[in-house]
Image (cartoon, rainbow, N blue to C red; front, top):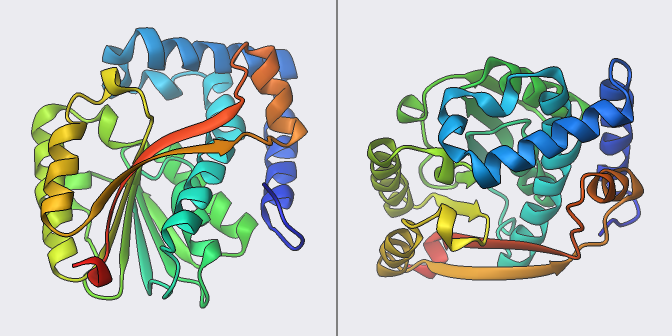
Length: 255
């Protein structure tokens, strides 16, 4: 999943050094197991910030979930041809550590300006570190998705592994805003896990995107994980053999 000149391995190595400086492999593995349990069994606690309420979980989020999301989004971007032409600006909604927007930005020439927003101040700071580590220009801040400025013509919006964590009312508001931005000729990319039970709203969103000339897809990519990810994957009992995702995509050319 990596190519010559790919900045991903360097970023991953920097992440390892950054997070193993204070935590052992076992501590990060336990954090990843706690994260996995939270997302699968105790999703009601996510909105309250439980995914990032301990050093082990934060490190696992940055060192495992961030790079995994990067790999998934990069494959989706490539499959959709989303980086051609290059968006002038990418708004990364619920940016986490910045992985999704960075994956899209790195596929584009010239590089877009990155703007990330997340409700977590820790995540926004980590996203700023990601931008620096990957040589991208942009900014990230803690804030409310309802107030995030969305680009119009020539821009891109990505919401990756974000919508499933929203309550119904803000989720409905976000859908309306994304469709409006798409009508203004922005490119809109939504990426989510493939599990239907965590996204009962997906069918409604897919129908809305298709009605506007967009598309809905499900993806299965080979999980050729770098050893830094594969070792955590094995130790936490996750055993990814494929990278699975579903996406919604709207672009001016598709309208």
